[in-house]
Amino acid sequence: MKPFFFTFISLLFSSYTFAAEVDTLTISSPTMGKSIKAVVIRPDHVESAKLPTLYLLHGYSGNYADWVNKVPMVKKMADDLQMIIVCPDGGFSSWYWDIPNVKNNQYETFITKELIDYIQGKYPVYDDRSKRGITGLSMGGHGALYLAIKHQDVFGAAGSTSGGVDIRPFPNNWDMAKLLGEYADNSEGWDQHTVIELTHLIKPKSLELFIDCGTEDFFYSVNNKFHEKLTYLNIPHHYLTMPGGHSWEYWNKSFLYQVMFFNNFFSKVSEKTP
Image (cartoon, rainbow, N blue to C red; front, side, top):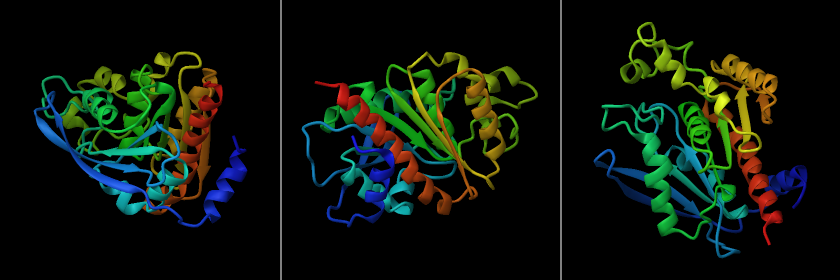
């Protein structure tokens, strides 16, 4: 496997020789009783019989098409790095939770079971957590870590860019109280649904983690605290901060670091596979 630096530089300056294929799918969710859109980006130039999969989650008020429309390099990276990238719709404000008694907000089940089963049946991907990762931005960064920590049998690596890794400092924002109830009335429920309080679930050597955040982002402070907690608990992880705010300008920059982390994870495992 090439060292990260040289792989990173070669991708920055390589030409757009191949164009990835983009499929727009409508996937049935029996749990929610509705159909959900997703974009699947697959290499046009395929070099192996099976490919690793990166699940890429959008933020609050976004949709399944955000990443492919607003970060053009997503298509190039799928082809250059030989991976399938799946961008599901996570609803306007689902936070990728399963909420009891709210039938149309069962996105944890949809992502970790229904969507993955669908992708496994339709595309030539590995059915192996060592070849499956998940990341996302903002609400999707929270969602990626939340789902990976709760489903370490499904994902081998997880990331977050500008993620809402602790939702509790924002009790009146982003429709969360509509799902969890008011923070003052249900602080325990909020604790159970925030990533920073799930670190006790991370098993030794189970998940590889990459977290980044812009220094001008309103989530910068909670990301620093999450990094400090992981460090205190001796949980290995990669943490990157760069200038930038909560914006597509920053995410166009940070995605390259995110995807290279996952490429290194997939490649490292590959070296151990006969």
